[in-house]
Amino acid sequence: MTFAPIAVITLRGYVTATALDTSSIFMKYIPLDVGISIRASASDLRSFSWRTGQRVEASFYVDDPEHLLRITFDGPCIVRIVDEFPLSTEHEDDPAEGLISEHFAYRVEGATFYTSQSETWKTVVSIQVGPTCHYRFITGNTCMEVVTPAKPVFTVIATETEA
Image 1 (tube, one colour):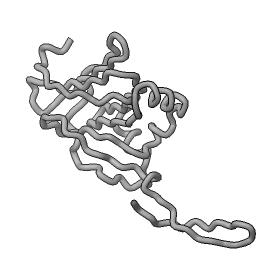
Image 2 (cartoon, helix red, strand yellow; image 1 turned 45 degrees about the vertical axis):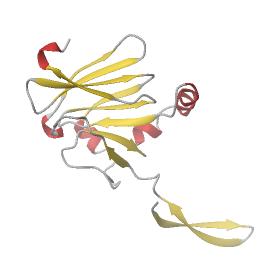
Image 3 (tube, helix red, strand yellow; image 1 turned 120 degrees about the vertical axis):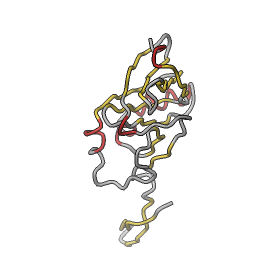
């Protein structure tokens, strides 16, 4: 837990000072192991699709041209697909705790994308399915973010099997 700034609170004419918990203010990246080598700057989104039910599938290029990484989420999702440049400048003043050079997949806490989503949706989904998380997949070009209670499933597939 990080305590840095001081808040001055006035209660009934008395001034008190307290340290603010800033751990939830700044973004925190929690790296995910996808089971294959991916240099984020050399990767890109190959395909994205909504499948039957609430399944989301995305395929990304990996360091091996014979294979792709397919990521699936089986559950309700909010998805954003965005170019790397606006994503990388969205939090220019925030420290990026946990961000690793060339790493591809993260669970993220405190990002604007997550906090700007419908609190009603997140609450209803949390009650019906489970707590929501924010996942971010960073490439040198097209990035993908997902808010969902579902855990990502990573599967390495042959490039020619991509439908």
